[in-house]
Image (cartoon, rainbow, N blue to C red; front, side, top):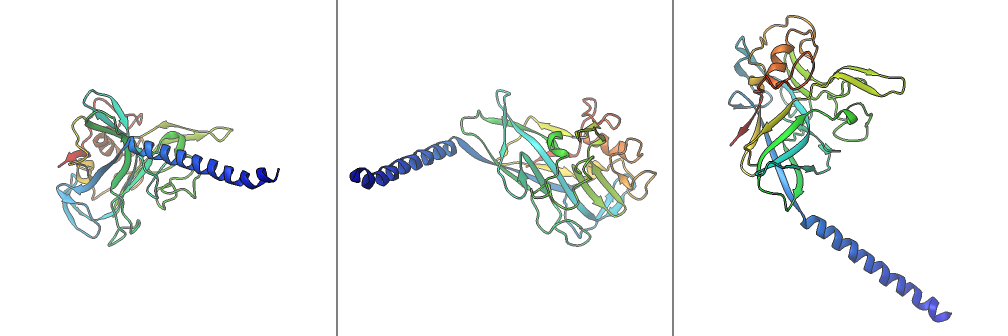
Length: 282
């Protein structure tokens, strides 16, 4: 009995060490089976890099001079397209900018007229399986998935970032691009809650973009504000909210939604439209 009591802790220690080694080996194997990937985004106004406290001339249908006040958007559902036309999901790393498969891209730095945060985030980080076939393209969706859009996650970043919440029923602003007296806020609309608190929205308003030719190692995805508002008169507002806040009858929204490839009446991606806002940059 005495011997058993003496040697039992040692046996437990050996077992614990063996378990730890096995767990470590499994973690190492999982890591070895993954390839780290980054996807870089850039924001521009025509061919000029977008920045706060900078004047941009000849923007929009009335050739208005503007300054950016806010430039943020959520993206999710990032998938690479392989040479054999298979989809490979990018598993986003978890950090203050990326959580639950959603990332917040932030190009403003709170200087000048900008009203957001000093920190910026323009590069997505994540992993794909190491044995994935060669990558040929990429697709992604702007916005937050419906199952996350109406959750209260005040302690979870980036869902708690000031200025991107549109209230519980409507959820989040998927896109917030602001200039003086003319804002673009795109999010789900026609949202109602049932007696159980479950929310459904008639207009999803989540732009989907695909590029069949994209090399994540050498190329970037460009977001051009000037392309978004090319048919919009930024010097005036003809009715509804100031600029476009996704209202189905807002006269400013038709041009904005067209450039995003969205049908304003339904909020769906329209195969008859060609989005102009996102492009591949070398």
